[in-house]
Image 1: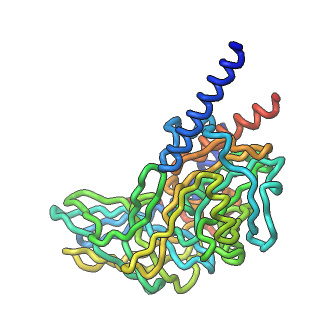
Image 2: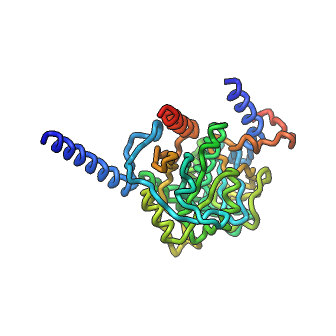
Image 3: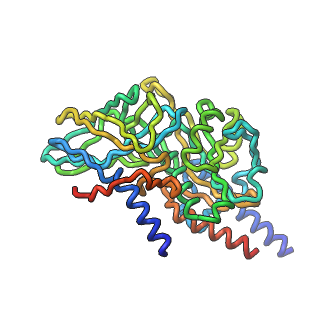
Length: 173
Length: 207
């Protein structure tokens, strides 16, 4: 029990810096955009985030680009029984008025294709999101561990390095 | 006489059940009894294989004998589902603590054209230091995927500059005997994998 509490505390201190960051624009609040570390041989990456539309007008995420990748596409999954089929989402993703859309593992993501260099943990990826009405929004995604998932951040206890002096951001959002 | 009839009926039921399970799997719909507690599906799932590991050495099912194994079929040009599952396996191993020594994590590629031993050698250590990456010829991969009832198919489209792989996303728990002890669906929390693995470990300890 104590051990798991301790583990949970460790997890929280390690994850907060990545998950706590938020990007604001005139029309959107984009919560903790993140990606996963990749191997040099891996030419693709995925970026996840939650996009909140703070206006009264529906918009659509219709594209993205990054200097770190040759091309960038919006992808989703079609799940048929237990078969996963990842496909490009050509029409974009609706972001409802005063609502939000989540890009999470197993659902939507922004796919980075033809990475110029491997994505390294604890670095950031500049990304320009393109919305049908609001136009361009610049954000930065934080690179987490290769196996990070929706359950949040670091996957391996031994990878949690406290010597790097993560600050608690105080989650003031 | 009665005993013979009894055996025949039992055998018939087993065959029908096995066929049903096989049909379900063939259509990507394994039995709906969830993963926890061991979704023991069909004794004919799994079996011998011959592949190449991420160091370039030959690797067969015999190399896993005597240990539990968590086997995942995926590919490296898969930025979402595969890293998620491999990450969950790594979390399960962390949660197993000392018992993790008895469990071998294994990823078998269903995309051998891209995933050579060299490609896998850079990929697998990102997830776990003991994760074994396995590849092979198209025929070797087809054989192991078929015996595990893994569906995979290359998706190619002129509108795409690359190909994707459609695939079933299960994690298989292999017992030390080499038999499949359980299958975990995509999205099974690592805690549930740990519960099932511990149940099997305790069961074996008693036996």
